[in-house]
Amino acid sequence: MQFGIFSVGDVTTDPTTGRTPDDTERVRAMLTIAKHADEAGLDVFATGEHHNPPFVPSSPTTMLGYLAGVTKQITLSTATTLITTNDPVRLAEEYAMLQVISDGRMDLMMGRGNTGPVYPWFGQDIRQGIPLAIENYALLRRLWTEDVVDWSGTFRTPLQGFTSTPRPLDGVAPFVWHGSIRSPEIAEQAAYYGDGFLHNAIFWPMEHTAQMVNFYRRRYEHHGHGSADQAIVGLGGQVFMRKDSQKAWDEFRPYFDNAPVYGHGPSMEDFTRETPLTVGSPQQVIDRYGAFWEQVGHYQRQLFLMDHAGLPLKTVLEQIDLLAGEVVPVLRQEAEARRPAHVPANPPSHAERVAAARAAGEVHAQPVAAADHWTGRTAEDDVAAADAVAR
Picture 1 (cartoon, helix red, strand yellow):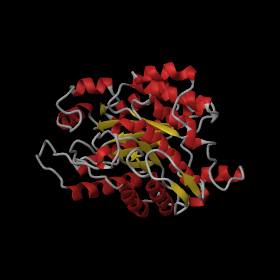
Picture 2 (cartoon, helix red, strand yellow):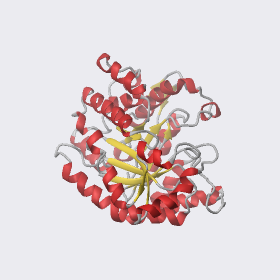
Picture 3 (cartoon, rainbow, N blue to C red):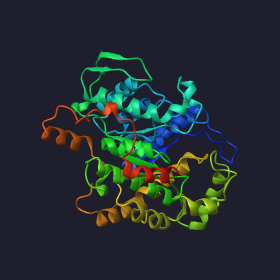
Protein backbone atom coordinates (compact mmCIF):
# COMPACT_ATOMS: atom_id res chain seq x y z
CA MET A 1 0.00 0.00 0.00
CA GLN A 2 1.22 3.50 -0.81
CA PHE A 3 1.33 6.33 1.71
CA GLY A 4 2.05 9.94 0.92
CA ILE A 5 1.11 13.57 1.35
CA PHE A 6 -0.75 16.12 -0.70
CA SER A 7 -0.71 19.89 -0.59
CA VAL A 8 -3.33 22.43 -1.60
CA GLY A 9 -0.67 25.15 -1.42
CA ASP A 10 -2.65 27.62 0.67
CA VAL A 11 -0.99 30.84 1.82
CA THR A 12 -2.36 31.28 5.32
CA THR A 13 -1.36 33.49 8.23
CA ASP A 14 0.14 31.61 11.18
CA PRO A 15 -2.39 32.44 13.92
CA THR A 16 0.21 32.00 16.67
CA THR A 17 2.65 34.56 15.24
CA GLY A 18 0.59 36.68 12.85
CA ARG A 19 3.14 36.05 10.10
CA THR A 20 2.04 35.39 6.52
CA PRO A 21 4.46 33.90 3.98
CA ASP A 22 4.55 35.41 0.52
CA ASP A 23 3.89 33.33 -2.59
CA THR A 24 7.57 32.68 -3.28
CA GLU A 25 8.20 31.40 0.23
CA ARG A 26 5.15 29.14 0.04
CA VAL A 27 6.17 27.61 -3.29
CA ARG A 28 9.67 26.95 -2.00
CA ALA A 29 8.24 25.43 1.17
CA MET A 30 6.23 22.98 -0.95
CA LEU A 31 9.41 21.96 -2.76
CA THR A 32 11.18 21.42 0.56
CA ILE A 33 8.26 19.36 1.84
CA ALA A 34 8.26 17.13 -1.24
CA LYS A 35 12.02 16.55 -1.04
CA HIS A 36 11.76 15.76 2.67
CA ALA A 37 8.94 13.30 2.04
CA ASP A 38 11.14 11.52 -0.50
CA GLU A 39 14.08 11.38 1.91
CA ALA A 40 11.79 10.11 4.70
CA GLY A 41 10.64 7.20 2.54
CA LEU A 42 7.06 8.19 1.75
CA ASP A 43 5.63 6.90 -1.51
CA VAL A 44 3.75 9.87 -3.00
CA PHE A 45 3.82 13.65 -3.13
CA ALA A 46 0.81 15.28 -4.78
CA THR A 47 0.04 18.92 -5.49
CA GLY A 48 -3.29 20.54 -6.14
CA GLU A 49 -4.04 22.93 -8.99
CA HIS A 50 -5.46 26.36 -8.18
CA HIS A 51 -5.63 29.63 -10.07
CA ASN A 52 -6.66 32.02 -7.32
CA PRO A 53 -5.39 33.38 -4.01
CA PRO A 54 -4.76 32.21 -1.34
CA PHE A 55 -3.37 29.21 -3.27
CA VAL A 56 -0.08 29.11 -5.21
CA PRO A 57 0.18 25.83 -7.22
CA SER A 58 -1.12 27.12 -10.55
CA SER A 59 1.35 25.06 -12.62
CA PRO A 60 1.60 21.49 -11.30
CA THR A 61 3.75 20.17 -14.14
CA THR A 62 6.35 22.88 -13.58
CA MET A 63 6.62 21.98 -9.90
CA LEU A 64 6.59 18.22 -10.47
CA GLY A 65 9.06 18.48 -13.34
CA TYR A 66 11.53 20.23 -11.03
CA LEU A 67 10.92 17.66 -8.31
CA ALA A 68 11.56 14.83 -10.76
CA GLY A 69 15.14 16.08 -10.98
CA VAL A 70 15.78 16.46 -7.25
CA THR A 71 14.00 13.42 -5.79
CA LYS A 72 14.90 9.77 -6.10
CA GLN A 73 12.03 7.40 -5.33
CA ILE A 74 8.80 9.22 -4.58
CA THR A 75 5.90 9.11 -7.04
CA LEU A 76 4.98 12.61 -8.20
CA SER A 77 1.31 13.23 -8.72
CA THR A 78 -1.41 15.82 -8.82
CA ALA A 79 -4.07 15.99 -6.16
CA THR A 80 -6.20 17.71 -8.79
CA THR A 81 -5.68 18.27 -12.49
CA LEU A 82 -8.54 20.45 -13.69
CA ILE A 83 -9.96 18.34 -16.51
CA THR A 84 -12.85 20.79 -16.97
CA THR A 85 -11.00 24.05 -17.57
CA ASN A 86 -7.69 22.89 -19.07
CA ASP A 87 -7.42 22.14 -22.77
CA PRO A 88 -7.03 18.36 -23.14
CA VAL A 89 -4.42 18.93 -25.86
CA ARG A 90 -2.22 20.83 -23.41
CA LEU A 91 -2.83 18.22 -20.72
CA ALA A 92 -1.76 15.46 -23.10
CA GLU A 93 1.44 17.30 -23.96
CA GLU A 94 2.37 18.53 -20.49
CA TYR A 95 1.82 15.27 -18.65
CA ALA A 96 3.49 13.17 -21.33
CA MET A 97 6.47 15.51 -20.98
CA LEU A 98 6.40 15.06 -17.20
CA GLN A 99 6.18 11.30 -17.69
CA VAL A 100 9.30 11.35 -19.88
CA ILE A 101 11.23 13.68 -17.56
CA SER A 102 10.40 11.62 -14.47
CA ASP A 103 11.03 8.30 -16.26
CA GLY A 104 7.48 7.22 -15.47
CA ARG A 105 7.65 8.16 -11.78
CA MET A 106 4.35 10.04 -11.91
CA ASP A 107 0.61 9.81 -12.23
CA LEU A 108 -2.22 12.34 -12.10
CA MET A 109 -5.68 12.78 -10.68
CA MET A 110 -8.45 14.33 -12.72
CA GLY A 111 -10.87 16.58 -10.89
CA ARG A 112 -13.23 19.49 -11.32
CA GLY A 113 -11.83 21.50 -8.42
CA ASN A 114 -13.79 23.41 -5.80
CA THR A 115 -13.46 27.00 -7.03
CA GLY A 116 -16.50 27.95 -9.05
CA PRO A 117 -15.08 31.15 -10.65
CA VAL A 118 -12.32 29.15 -12.36
CA TYR A 119 -14.82 28.19 -15.07
CA PRO A 120 -15.44 31.68 -16.50
CA TRP A 121 -11.77 32.57 -15.99
CA PHE A 122 -10.99 29.87 -18.56
CA GLY A 123 -14.01 30.47 -20.76
CA GLN A 124 -16.23 27.64 -19.52
CA ASP A 125 -19.64 27.27 -17.89
CA ILE A 126 -19.74 25.64 -14.46
CA ARG A 127 -23.16 24.20 -15.32
CA GLN A 128 -21.36 22.05 -17.89
CA GLY A 129 -18.89 20.64 -15.35
CA ILE A 130 -19.79 16.96 -15.74
CA PRO A 131 -20.08 17.02 -19.57
CA LEU A 132 -16.74 18.87 -19.74
CA ALA A 133 -15.08 16.24 -17.54
CA ILE A 134 -16.46 13.44 -19.71
CA GLU A 135 -15.63 14.91 -23.12
CA ASN A 136 -12.23 16.33 -22.22
CA TYR A 137 -11.00 13.10 -20.68
CA ALA A 138 -12.22 11.03 -23.62
CA LEU A 139 -10.18 13.25 -25.93
CA LEU A 140 -7.16 13.16 -23.62
CA ARG A 141 -7.13 9.36 -23.73
CA ARG A 142 -7.26 9.34 -27.50
CA LEU A 143 -4.40 11.82 -27.72
CA TRP A 144 -2.28 9.48 -25.59
CA THR A 145 -3.30 6.19 -27.21
CA GLU A 146 -3.60 7.17 -30.88
CA ASP A 147 -0.72 8.59 -32.91
CA VAL A 148 -3.00 10.60 -35.23
CA VAL A 149 -6.32 11.95 -34.00
CA ASP A 150 -9.33 13.27 -35.91
CA TRP A 151 -11.86 14.59 -33.44
CA SER A 152 -14.80 16.93 -33.02
CA GLY A 153 -16.86 17.66 -29.93
CA THR A 154 -18.83 20.30 -28.08
CA PHE A 155 -16.32 22.29 -26.05
CA ARG A 156 -13.28 22.93 -28.26
CA THR A 157 -12.39 23.31 -31.92
CA PRO A 158 -12.05 20.11 -33.99
CA LEU A 159 -8.74 18.34 -34.56
CA GLN A 160 -7.67 17.00 -37.94
CA GLY A 161 -4.66 14.73 -38.26
CA PHE A 162 -3.28 15.93 -34.92
CA THR A 163 -0.39 14.23 -33.12
CA SER A 164 0.33 15.14 -29.52
CA THR A 165 4.02 15.35 -28.62
CA PRO A 166 5.96 14.00 -26.93
CA ARG A 167 4.41 10.58 -27.19
CA PRO A 168 3.86 8.78 -23.86
CA LEU A 169 6.90 7.05 -22.40
CA ASP A 170 7.32 3.53 -23.82
CA GLY A 171 4.01 3.97 -25.65
CA VAL A 172 2.02 3.69 -22.41
CA ALA A 173 -0.04 6.55 -21.05
CA PRO A 174 0.32 7.73 -17.44
CA PHE A 175 -1.88 6.07 -14.84
CA VAL A 176 -4.90 8.24 -14.10
CA TRP A 177 -7.01 8.67 -10.98
CA HIS A 178 -10.38 10.39 -10.93
CA GLY A 179 -11.15 12.36 -7.79
CA SER A 180 -14.61 13.23 -6.59
CA ILE A 181 -16.26 13.69 -3.21
CA ARG A 182 -19.90 13.85 -4.26
CA SER A 183 -20.47 13.03 -7.96
CA PRO A 184 -21.31 9.42 -8.83
CA GLU A 185 -20.84 10.30 -12.51
CA ILE A 186 -17.10 10.71 -11.86
CA ALA A 187 -16.91 7.43 -9.96
CA GLU A 188 -18.67 5.86 -12.95
CA GLN A 189 -16.17 7.47 -15.32
CA ALA A 190 -13.25 5.98 -13.38
CA ALA A 191 -14.90 2.57 -13.37
CA TYR A 192 -15.74 2.71 -17.07
CA TYR A 193 -12.11 3.19 -18.07
CA GLY A 194 -10.66 0.93 -15.39
CA ASP A 195 -8.82 3.90 -13.86
CA GLY A 196 -8.21 4.63 -10.20
CA PHE A 197 -10.73 6.45 -7.99
CA LEU A 198 -9.68 8.67 -5.09
CA HIS A 199 -12.14 9.99 -2.55
CA ASN A 200 -10.63 12.92 -0.70
CA ALA A 201 -12.79 12.61 2.37
CA ILE A 202 -11.24 15.38 4.45
CA PHE A 203 -14.60 17.11 4.97
CA TRP A 204 -16.91 14.08 4.88
CA PRO A 205 -17.86 11.22 7.20
CA MET A 206 -16.55 7.77 6.33
CA GLU A 207 -20.08 6.56 5.68
CA HIS A 208 -20.30 8.83 2.66
CA THR A 209 -16.84 7.80 1.52
CA ALA A 210 -17.82 4.14 1.73
CA GLN A 211 -20.91 4.78 -0.42
CA MET A 212 -18.87 6.42 -3.16
CA VAL A 213 -16.04 3.88 -3.10
CA ASN A 214 -18.35 0.88 -3.07
CA PHE A 215 -20.38 2.32 -5.96
CA TYR A 216 -17.14 2.68 -7.94
CA ARG A 217 -16.15 -0.88 -7.07
CA ARG A 218 -19.46 -2.30 -8.33
CA ARG A 219 -19.21 -0.37 -11.57
CA TYR A 220 -15.55 -1.37 -12.06
CA GLU A 221 -16.61 -5.02 -11.94
CA HIS A 222 -19.63 -4.31 -14.16
CA HIS A 223 -17.33 -2.93 -16.88
CA GLY A 224 -15.21 -6.07 -16.84
CA HIS A 225 -11.94 -4.81 -15.41
CA GLY A 226 -11.81 -7.33 -12.58
CA SER A 227 -13.63 -8.12 -9.37
CA ALA A 228 -14.92 -5.25 -7.26
CA ASP A 229 -12.24 -5.75 -4.63
CA GLN A 230 -9.51 -5.41 -7.28
CA ALA A 231 -10.49 -1.84 -8.17
CA ILE A 232 -7.79 0.77 -7.50
CA VAL A 233 -8.89 3.02 -4.64
CA GLY A 234 -7.26 5.94 -2.84
CA LEU A 235 -8.37 8.03 0.14
CA GLY A 236 -7.45 11.48 1.36
CA GLY A 237 -7.10 12.35 5.03
CA GLN A 238 -5.46 14.73 7.44
CA VAL A 239 -3.64 14.34 10.73
CA PHE A 240 -1.67 16.30 13.30
CA MET A 241 0.53 14.36 15.70
CA ARG A 242 2.70 14.73 18.74
CA LYS A 243 4.03 12.02 21.04
CA ASP A 244 1.70 13.36 23.70
CA SER A 245 -1.90 13.49 22.50
CA GLN A 246 -2.89 16.50 24.59
CA LYS A 247 0.08 18.48 23.28
CA ALA A 248 -1.11 17.74 19.75
CA TRP A 249 -4.58 19.09 20.55
CA ASP A 250 -3.21 22.20 22.23
CA GLU A 251 -0.76 22.96 19.43
CA PHE A 252 -3.11 22.35 16.51
CA ARG A 253 -6.23 24.04 17.90
CA PRO A 254 -5.39 27.65 16.89
CA TYR A 255 -4.55 26.47 13.37
CA PHE A 256 -7.80 24.54 13.12
CA ASP A 257 -9.87 27.38 14.53
CA ASN A 258 -8.48 29.84 11.94
CA ALA A 259 -8.09 27.54 8.92
CA PRO A 260 -9.34 29.17 5.69
CA VAL A 261 -11.87 26.42 4.96
CA TYR A 262 -13.23 25.00 8.21
CA GLY A 263 -12.09 27.69 10.65
CA HIS A 264 -14.76 29.54 12.66
CA GLY A 265 -17.12 26.63 11.97
CA PRO A 266 -17.54 23.26 13.71
CA SER A 267 -15.42 22.67 16.79
CA MET A 268 -12.28 20.59 16.46
CA GLU A 269 -13.95 17.97 18.65
CA ASP A 270 -16.91 17.73 16.25
CA PHE A 271 -14.72 17.76 13.17
CA THR A 272 -12.40 15.00 14.37
CA ARG A 273 -15.42 12.90 15.29
CA GLU A 274 -17.25 13.35 11.98
CA THR A 275 -14.35 13.37 9.47
CA PRO A 276 -11.00 11.56 9.11
CA LEU A 277 -9.11 14.47 10.71
CA THR A 278 -7.15 12.84 13.53
CA VAL A 279 -5.32 14.90 16.13
CA GLY A 280 -3.32 13.01 18.70
CA SER A 281 -0.52 10.48 19.03
CA PRO A 282 0.92 8.33 16.24
CA GLN A 283 -0.85 5.33 17.76
CA GLN A 284 -4.20 7.09 17.54
CA VAL A 285 -3.57 7.76 13.85
CA ILE A 286 -2.67 4.09 13.35
CA ASP A 287 -5.84 2.97 15.11
CA ARG A 288 -8.09 5.35 13.17
CA TYR A 289 -6.70 4.84 9.68
CA GLY A 290 -6.06 1.16 10.18
CA ALA A 291 -9.81 0.65 10.57
CA PHE A 292 -10.89 2.34 7.33
CA TRP A 293 -10.42 -0.85 5.32
CA GLU A 294 -13.41 -2.29 7.17
CA GLN A 295 -15.63 0.27 5.41
CA VAL A 296 -14.02 0.57 1.98
CA GLY A 297 -12.10 -2.71 1.55
CA HIS A 298 -8.40 -2.97 0.85
CA TYR A 299 -7.23 0.18 -0.88
CA GLN A 300 -3.99 1.11 -2.57
CA ARG A 301 -3.16 4.72 -1.66
CA GLN A 302 -3.59 6.90 1.41
CA LEU A 303 -2.67 10.58 1.16
CA PHE A 304 -2.48 12.99 4.09
CA LEU A 305 -2.88 16.78 4.13
CA MET A 306 -0.22 18.17 6.48
CA ASP A 307 0.97 21.61 5.36
CA HIS A 308 -2.19 23.68 5.56
CA ALA A 309 -3.74 26.32 7.82
CA GLY A 310 -0.53 28.32 8.30
CA LEU A 311 1.52 25.58 9.98
CA PRO A 312 5.23 26.51 10.03
CA LEU A 313 7.53 24.60 7.69
CA LYS A 314 9.51 23.20 10.63
CA THR A 315 6.34 21.75 12.09
CA VAL A 316 5.31 20.20 8.78
CA LEU A 317 8.68 18.50 8.42
CA GLU A 318 8.33 17.12 11.94
CA GLN A 319 4.91 15.77 11.03
CA ILE A 320 6.36 14.02 7.98
CA ASP A 321 9.02 12.39 10.16
CA LEU A 322 6.38 11.11 12.59
CA LEU A 323 4.24 9.84 9.73
CA ALA A 324 7.09 8.10 7.91
CA GLY A 325 8.86 6.83 11.01
CA GLU A 326 6.07 5.70 13.33
CA VAL A 327 2.78 5.48 11.46
CA VAL A 328 3.42 4.26 7.91
CA PRO A 329 5.54 1.18 8.78
CA VAL A 330 2.77 -0.15 11.02
CA LEU A 331 -0.08 0.67 8.62
CA ARG A 332 1.86 -0.80 5.69
CA GLN A 333 2.48 -4.04 7.59
CA GLU A 334 -1.15 -4.27 8.67
CA ALA A 335 -2.40 -3.56 5.15
CA GLU A 336 -0.22 -6.27 3.64
CA ALA A 337 -1.23 -8.80 6.29
CA ARG A 338 -4.94 -8.38 5.52
CA ARG A 339 -4.66 -7.99 1.73
CA PRO A 340 -6.17 -10.90 -0.24
CA ALA A 341 -3.66 -12.40 -2.66
CA HIS A 342 -5.72 -11.47 -5.73
CA VAL A 343 -6.01 -7.79 -4.74
CA PRO A 344 -3.29 -5.36 -5.94
CA ALA A 345 -1.08 -4.04 -3.17
CA ASN A 346 -0.38 -0.76 -4.98
CA PRO A 347 -1.55 1.20 -8.00
CA PRO A 348 0.12 -0.13 -11.15
CA SER A 349 3.60 1.28 -11.74
CA HIS A 350 4.77 2.44 -15.14
CA ALA A 351 6.96 -0.66 -15.46
CA GLU A 352 4.01 -2.92 -14.69
CA ARG A 353 1.82 -1.16 -17.23
CA VAL A 354 4.52 -1.42 -19.88
CA ALA A 355 5.01 -5.13 -19.16
CA ALA A 356 1.26 -5.75 -19.40
CA ALA A 357 1.02 -3.85 -22.70
CA ARG A 358 3.94 -5.76 -24.19
CA ALA A 359 2.57 -9.09 -23.00
CA ALA A 360 -0.67 -8.27 -24.78
CA GLY A 361 1.21 -7.29 -27.94
CA GLU A 362 0.09 -3.69 -27.72
CA VAL A 363 2.08 -0.71 -28.87
CA HIS A 364 0.00 1.52 -26.61
CA ALA A 365 -1.98 0.91 -23.46
CA GLN A 366 -5.27 -0.68 -24.47
CA PRO A 367 -7.84 2.02 -25.39
CA VAL A 368 -11.49 1.49 -24.54
CA ALA A 369 -13.65 0.96 -27.62
CA ALA A 370 -15.75 3.99 -28.56
CA ALA A 371 -14.60 5.75 -25.41
CA ASP A 372 -15.24 9.16 -26.93
CA HIS A 373 -18.94 8.35 -27.26
CA TRP A 374 -19.52 7.53 -23.61
CA THR A 375 -22.19 9.79 -22.12
CA GLY A 376 -21.64 9.20 -18.41
CA ARG A 377 -24.97 7.41 -17.90
CA THR A 378 -24.93 4.45 -15.54
CA ALA A 379 -26.71 1.17 -16.13
CA GLU A 380 -30.31 1.04 -14.96
CA ASP A 381 -29.52 -1.37 -12.15
CA ASP A 382 -27.27 1.26 -10.49
CA VAL A 383 -29.20 4.45 -11.16
CA ALA A 384 -30.88 4.23 -7.76
CA ALA A 385 -27.52 3.74 -6.07
CA ALA A 386 -26.08 6.75 -7.87
CA ASP A 387 -29.02 8.89 -6.78
CA ALA A 388 -28.56 7.74 -3.21
CA VAL A 389 -24.89 8.67 -3.24
CA ALA A 390 -25.63 12.06 -4.79
CA ARG A 391 -28.05 12.82 -1.97
